[in-house]
Image (tube, rainbow, N blue to C red):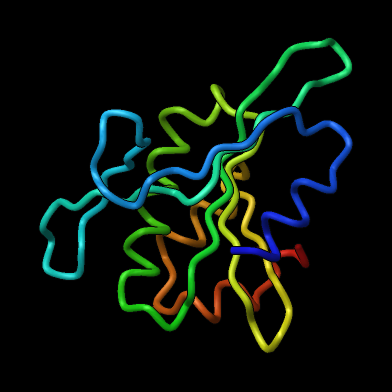
Length: 136
């Protein structure tokens, strides 16, 4: 998380950021997903960054670092991909970040091909190592 935060805050267009609470509160952004058993759960992406564009408009971006070793990684990615399909146009960026072999890799969920790859993936680590991810 710290590496992602440092990288984002180094960008010149960042005007604010928010650490989304990990638990249910009135001020947290939750995204629904189905767990491995098919039950509905809520994920809370770690960060929301606010950037000011050249048009002086401030836009929000969701950036969620998550370990691929965690059992909920792929179900949460699918939930975030489904959320992006419905609400992606309301955000500047929606990205998932993971460390693969010592390097941070990012999935840009605003890309349709990336969302399709997430929905069809059998393994999150393979997905982050694939052509659908870029170096962060």
